Image (cartoon, rainbow, N blue to C red; front, side, top):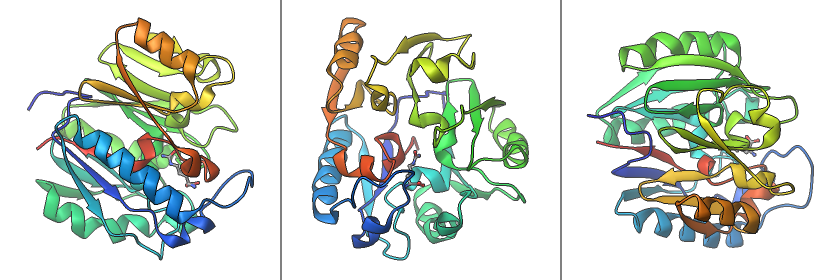
Length: 262
Ligand code: CIR
């Protein structure tokens, strides 16, 4: 199987729970509405399916308010799921809750054994490397213990820094193709993408950086017209999706799926 960092046959999502109103957030701008969140989530799932992928949607898990952000609990690489250790108390159990579904869906499941922590939102995979951004959620110990697991799957792991005040590394960056990243100027200034071409989000459109290249499409959060225009002019097929409710609990497009090929 080739190391295609943006070509996927499958995705796995989880419907937002009613408890999503209790989701974690750095700043309170009001609770998300579970009903509106589910509508936006349905549009997201339909958009992933429209690229030709098979998308499985798991039932809501009321025990975990943030469980719609399924990306944080696992990393899918080469048909294997690596069960991570989310680095905040209310989310640590999401990994074990998700594990049985990944046992059914994936070719294999590997448990990250570590005293540290890693959130999937801090992991950005290109064709050749797995970047892990240290953050308030992801520790050096966790990243170091993940290193041999991804090495066995053919990837070099590179530890990078997530600038302070940014929740996850991919809150402000995403892969556009094998050579190109979309990033906020603030995150790119750390030098982590010096070996890639970088397209910056427009000023005031930092939320656009949490995008996903999924098969032939770059999915971008609605409300970022200048960044959408830049990507369009650079030759990408851009589809905008509403993320108003995810944004209220610090989430975006990448957090809401695990993307993989079998
Ligand atoms: C949290 O604070 O964990 C959630 N409210 C948001 C998680 C967003 N996930 C991501 O950026 N990968």
